[in-house]
Each structure stands twice: as C-alpha cells, then as structure tokens.
Length: 566
Image (cartoon, rainbow, N blue to C red):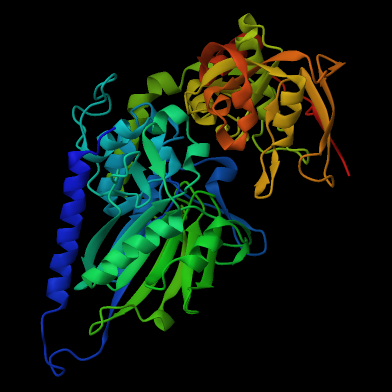
C-alpha cells in the first residue's frame, strides 16, 4: 500500500501551521510590552464515545461516585450542553477526543456508518482526535472516508444526501504503512489565547490484536513512547513548548471520577516514559475513570486522566501558559473529570441531529426479533461466564451446525450491552427484543468461521484466557464445560474439559465455531490460528437474530458451564 498523497499533504500543512505559530510566538517585544504573565487555556476531552448519540442505558449510562452512589449520565444533547458550559467559563478552550469516537456504535449511528456521530462531533467543535482501535473497524479506506468525506462505496449516502467528513484531524503518530510512510498525521498545532499548543496522537501498539487482520492490512503500529517522544522532539525544535498527548491506551481503576486508584498498566508505563516536554496526557480505551498525577522523566508531575466512555464524563485540564516562554506552568495545572449529568437543558442543535438519526433508523431498529423471560447480562458471574454470553455462543453453534460444529466460543469484548426485560425503547412491551437492541449487543458484523482444533489446541485456547496483563473469559456454548483453578499458575489453570459430556481427548479433533476476529488470533488467542479446514458461516448478528426467531422466549441459562475451584 502506497502512502496517501493527502496524508503527506496534511503532514506538510501541520508542520507549516506549527511554524506559523512559532513565528508569531517569536516576534520580539519589550519586557514592558510583554510582562511574564500567563494565559489560561482549558482543554476539554472525552474518550470512547462509540456513537452513543442517545443517552446510554443501564450501567452504561451511569457514573459511580466516591462512596459507591451512582448518577445517570451521557447522551449527545447533554454532552453538548456541558461542553458549552465548560467553554463559557474559560474563554480559551479546546475540545479534543482520545479516540473510539465511532465503531461498536448503537444502531442510530451504525446503520449510517457513523456519519451522524461525525456530524455531531463537527457541530460540537472537536479540534483533534487520536484514532482508537474502533476507528479501524471498517478498514483504513473507510477511516479516510470518515476524515475526508464522500458517500460509502457500497451503501451510498443514507443518512443525508452528502457526507463532508470530519472537520478535525484523526491523529496517529505511531501508525504507518508497511513501507514506513506515515498513514496519519502525527500531530496538529492549535493556537488558543495566542499560545500554540502541540497535540500529539498515539494509539495502542497492540491494536492488531483487537482488530481483524484484514481491516489493517498494510499498516504497522509502533511503540507509543517512541512515537510520542519523536513527535514531541519535532515540536520542541519548532518552538512549540506547550504539548499534550491524546493516548488511546488506558489502565483499569476503582473509585470515583477524580480518584487515582489505578492498577498500574500500559497507560502508567507510557506516562512515566514520555518526554518531559509533554504537559498532560489524556487516555482512553479501557473505559475507566481516573485523575492522576504521574511524574515525567524529569520528576515533574503532570495529569494523566480518563473519562469512562459513551460521553458520561468530560476530562478537563486547565493550563496556565507563560506568555514569555510559551510553556505550561506545571505547578498551576488543575485537572478534573466533569460528570455529564442529565439535569441540564439538552442542547437544541444536538437534540435535533440525534432525533433525525433515531427517526431514520427506526423502521429497522424497532423491528421485533424475539422475546426474553428476564434480563440477559453481558457481565459475567464470578467464573466470568455470563447469561448473554451463553445465549450468543449457543446461537453461534446453531448457526454453524451445517459445518459440523461441536462447540462455539466468543470473545467477551464483542458483547457490548445487556438485553433487558423491561419495556424496549420502541415501546414494544416487556420482554421484547428489537433489532436495534440486538445490534447494540453485537455491532461488529463479524463473520462466523468453523475450524478444526485438536483437544490439545482446545486446552491451550482455554489457558490463553489468563495472561500477565489480565483475564478474558471466552463465552462458550452449552456443549463445552470445564473447571479452572483460581490459584493455579498461568498456563496450568484448566482441567476437566468435556465436549458433549465426554472428556476431551488431546489427540482427537473437534469442530469449533468462532468469529473471524478470534480465528485470526484476536485478543491474544493465537492458538485459534492453528485451526484447519475452515468453513464460513453467517454474520454473528444474523446468528443471534435467527436464534431468537427459533427459540423465543429465551430464558437466562444457568451459567454452569465454567466451574471455579480455589
């Protein structure tokens, strides 16, 4: 894949903008005309919006406060109101995003290839965004369409007559073509209050493990620290002293929005190593809330923040920039996470756009596909098994029976929401499941594939659920049972595997259905790549819809497929 001329032109344009800002900054002035005072600049950032134009429901629409109380939050119209309120408090403000604006979106956005979400972000005034992994869900060419506009090559323009693209740059300092040429802008420079501010974007270097291989064919994702430091050095040489990073990588945490009770992970590691020239780091990807101060390599603290997901929090960093040096006065930096409450007046323009998207999606979204007898939860029990995961795996097994499938397994990250028994948004009545609700659960359009694994391969797959960096419990069909020991070492946790009630023979072969993401080794499950005799199947969402059509009302399974011992 050759480098895009448009990307190269935009790289040149970004550099020219930075040089222009520095030229202004370097204009001579007397001490009397320019005293060493500061300029206030507010940075407002959100992350992992995922096209949640409507207020997200259930646990996805709540923020946990210190002490454990919760408050409902999120929704584009409320987000817009809160952004405008925050901007009104500080005249020099910039609105940014830490990635995953699109992809894994509810039906009102996803049916239109997330064009309504980009239109909303344009209206909101976003100035720059890093790419997240979900920006690549439909591939690099589609990401370029999201940036520059044009109708979808297959579906055309379905939301509006035209699509003009994002009015803000998608950044990715560590994203390159396999020939080494940059695939995205590494940075942009914005001038606020007369001060040039360099904004660097870097996505997770492990992005290939969470996106299908076909979607990122021809692309490489480099080390985050190396890319940020390289780009920061360019900005240093250009004279752009105030620098911030949009990092689509994060840690896990507990506590309230402004607590710093994090389990130190990749974001902490990166924050400790990134150039001391960087003054603040906005993170994403892990859908967590935290507000930390982490020392840079020179020993000076700087904010490292994240604001949950789905537009429930806004991460706010207030900077004071020295007018003489053009650098941030670190000791004066203040950061907090603002809850996007729903007790404010919805922004009229945003509400109108959301209403347009919902209305246009309604004929498809409100179609009834089946019923449930109680909530099907995406969150797992203590074992990691979930009732909704069980149903999805059973549906995938049913859908691939013609391939001789004996087992189905699916990744928990592909299950994006609960199915709740209470009356659906379409007003269909308790227990009704609509197409839109099913789409929200499984929005990726992954294709089912059936492969042959040995019993030894199967054991290895199950062992790969535990790694040094975390646990990802695969959701499994009713034909597969096993036990794991919580205290056993990684690599030796699983025992008692049965298929169809019979103990697994390491030398025997088994037909296993997974989605194409897992078949390609996604989420670190590399053992699946050893599968043979691949046979294709339906899209995962179609499998779920067919299952509801054949088995409604669907009751929550017993969640007894995985047993845990000490």
